[in-house]
Length: 188
Image (tube, rainbow, N blue to C red; front, side):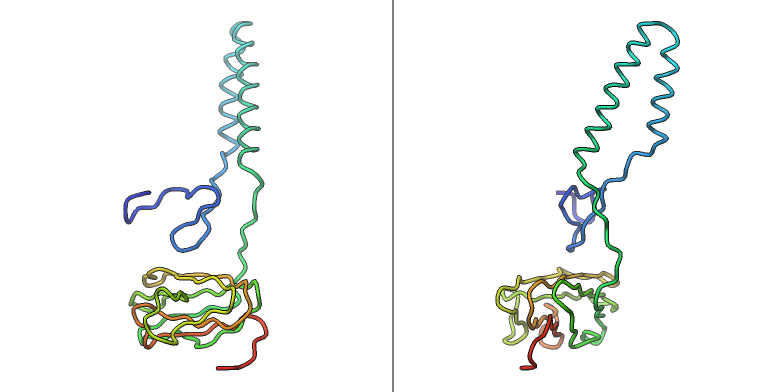
């Protein structure tokens, strides 16, 4: 684990950056690097037959390295740049900018801390201290954003239909919201 306040250059395959965001794939090696290596190897091969054999061996090893690296990297996954189905802000007046948001199953909601105060987005019974501040549909997974500093965002994709009641941990008594996923009867 890296020291507090420091980020690694790349989180690794299948791992996530801090608050639920997927890390990028490692940057590909630029083609000019391959060309520079090949040019250097080819210029050496003109000096002697043994150097030419060495060049062939190096090219063969280099080809295996490139091929093996591409096979180990796995398929390239397209990163979606689409906008979330809804965006909810967090204010200095201890409220979410939208009390209720409707989305379909599989859609994502983004919360953005537009205030100067640290907030959270939490639907986790273990973190709730006030009765009625949170509720999850049967089978839904609890979520918690962690502390969201000013201008930070948190995204959550809703896979289970139903009514989600969430809250901000430091301001639980006042700061609550609802996400309705799919067709749900209005029951309060």
